[in-house]
Length: 122
Image (cartoon, rainbow, N blue to C red):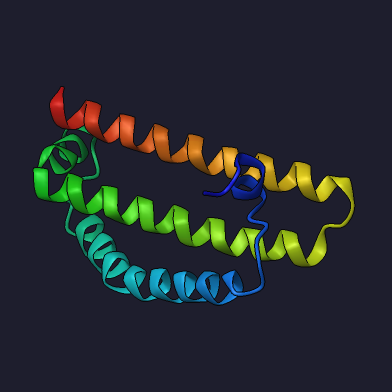
């Protein structure tokens, strides 16, 4: 079991780089149909008013697909941001930046889930 510090900083052995690479590629492939669905759904939304957007998100299938889309998007973005930080940030600021970005992605995910569930269940 990884310690909290190891998990937050994604510090591990060298074999985890391959796993990271695969996760990033799989999330990229998953984003293709999800993004196409999202673009199609937004394009066919209609008048883009609050009631039509609320009705769109209130549909269980759309809400589930939005949750999967947002989760995959945040996961893929977090993996990419981690690589950039590992490559370009040095010193103690690297640790702080890694922790802050992980926390920011967790907060964004929690807010997205909360908002979607609140719309879905009233």
